Image (cartoon, rainbow, N blue to C red; front, side):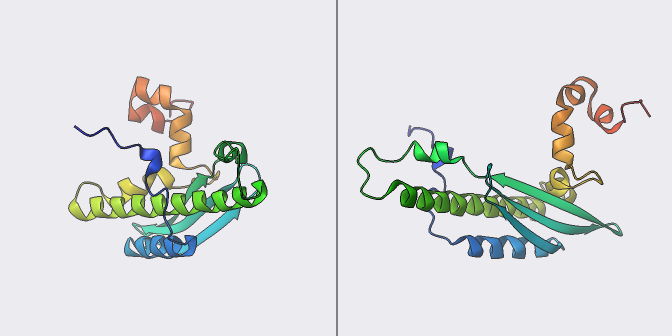
Length: 167
């Protein structure tokens, strides 16, 4: 039996440019009826990119957000060869770009998988998008749920949806 695949290696050497992955993601979101696709790149520490989009559902439009963190430079630099022939700064820039390409491919594949799950009846569109919907305070459903996970597991989903005063 072959050893289990290392998930950290998936799409590691992709050559697909970031803009192609973003175009593919926008097309997938349009398939779900989403509009207003917006990308934001934040290269400050911690570096990340954010995807936001509007999703119309039952007469209302909801905002959704997915933030993807890039590995910190310290982590990337651990792979710098001891006898590197490329200057450290040049190598780091190349590796940052590769990580960004890989993460964009993984996001595209995740959304493709979700779309396939919706088309096959495994998920509804609402179930696929729900974790990423933003409330008026700018936090996503996922962020709120994670902060209250012990309560959710202790009292069930209804406990998560009640406010702190029990209404």
